[in-house]
Image (cartoon, rainbow, N blue to C red):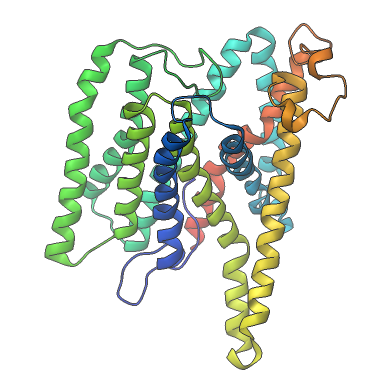
Length: 375
């Protein structure tokens, strides 16, 4: 995720991406929710156990998988956008399948490792993208400042991942067991002081610019601090599948869904309301329209997410019988190896089901960068 069009600043020159309230709820609210889930999990006795069913539904199905399909509202459900780069949008999923199937046919382990590292790169780049957006809204073009900001947000995500790689195995995985490579512990020892120094430099610069120049950028600060806290707690402090899931997924998926909804509907409806005039726009009708659009948006991506997970479970994993057990089209306990390479079509099923997320990872690096240049 690189950049998009949005409100530039508030009247007091504080940079925002959406609006002050929405910015805080998207970034601060999602982080507070993720962190609040930790004592709740401890109280329920699931903090150091496998993630419970309700957590799998809310965090994985309704956020992690669903936010992938939100990209469709930015690209594939927008005919104007499709006309802009038809070859990119047509070839990306096709190539994703062909390359994925080629790798999967040679090695399932390598397939999941490649997919895991592609996802990791995407997660890291999205956090950097938010920082870049806030810098753009502020008009901060200082080169040294860019280096300080970039190193800080990258270290906030990369160092916890280094720690993970140097302390394998953990009680959680990205996708499957063994999808990360083990690294020597000295790499983590070297990276740790760089991690703390980069965050100190970032907040030192932020406070200095705010106190001396009045150049406060609280949204950017919020992204950096919530990223640092959630990734550190979820990966380093707590060796817990539950903790990793809530801290990793919520702050990644929720802001992205806000971004897509805001880009797809809020800006256009706000412009139309302004053109019509206050006398012709009723608050109740606007609320009903917004509620309908939000219901359509969430309903569509949730249905698509459910359909994908249904196919994953019945065709590959066979782990969620309590949710998908009604579907017995050749999978389930009667044929638990339907998604394996040895079955008739197993070699292409997993690569095919991975196409939406790979497409999301790839296109996310194009669509927002181009929007920023038009802004």
